[in-house]
Image (cartoon, rainbow over all chains, first blue to last red; front, side):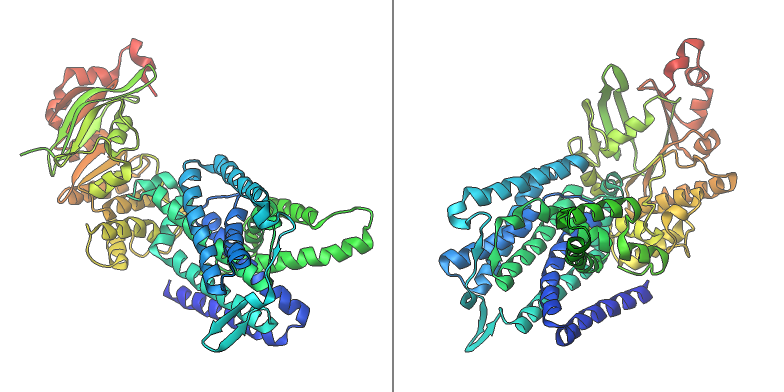
Length: 327
Length: 247
């Protein structure tokens, strides 16, 4: 057990170090992609906490990501808030939303939980249009470049500058990765896994399973909102697409591909899926121009194949076959 | 001496079926009490009412002087009522260690236990004879060992009342022998409520026996009294009209 802990810590440090090193070697395009992917991987890690560890399949996590996006983006555009205040606002919006949604949706289980979360997310999506005068609907809002900076005394850190942006994304990713690792190896993490495996038995061991699931929901919502807030700050755009059903399905897909209930699975899944969609677009255009398959088609096919043939994902399979210590 | 557990007028009806019907029942501190009865007599429903897995239709449950009738099951566990399942339900995909760590960290968080998770897990495993198997995935253990693991989980809750629902079912004679010794040891600091079909086990362990039949208490007494009771013999052997009471 202790040997496993050492290996797990070494692996996580190595991954963070590798991402740091990639900053210096990647060509501009991939450098930009990876910065974006790291933020989206944070979204996936938040989803993984609830789905992978606690076993709660939500189909509405776009609402938590969007809570972070709009929670941070709207005050920046309309009230001229600075980056730290906007980020905090996004985070708080996600925490409050996940608390309320958790209190309501966790009264249901299984398929009903999936439907209820999806419906709430749909309400969130429609609210973006309802308040169109503030959000500008699917057209969205662009955050001015000069607003996207951090100030430390006289020093100004321009978050639109590629390296700064990459490092900021890496910092957020690393914090969330380490936090996830700590949480899933804590006694709380053990309870979440127990709830996933057998909720009734967990209750008969003296656990208030509702309270534990609610805590998981809020932690998950907070992480997803942090990703959303970081996204709008680093990439400067917020639009209704991010609140649509597509952004509820994507984190599920990333997590399934990388391996549910593995700490690094979300990163692996997000990177691979991004390049799969990116690469397949060109290939399809060249070799099958008449098929007219959008990237959503690729997502759908990937999801079906994964569930049918590869339910444990990449890291889940590796853990089963070769590395039981993998957290 | 006041009883540790008192049940008054407890009923649970499923539609027209009176699974448990107006039962009055009390267990003294430190006692090993066996509950026996033919299949479908309501034994599992009765203990499920006590530990809170099922809500009663009417009646009252008093544990250690407090009314616990309306408490959710996890609150009752925290007060010291532990239940081990009739059908083995260890966490099959987790290690034996994690299975026991769950109840251990609960008792520590409640302040009912003292010490460290690791030490307490190891001592619970050792107590049931599973030391050295902590890294095994629970689902890969033999059936007998899974039952012992289940018992270790119950022990780790540091219960004041431990409810064992058919614990020897599916165990070999040698394993049953061990098990009897283990229950005796547990009974030194906990009260035990034992549902059991294996009569030699019941006769050897129980201080008193309660016989349930069709949801009501048919008889109660020492093992010798129950053995001599004509009504009990009748209920167990049955008459042709009662054959459909199974279930």
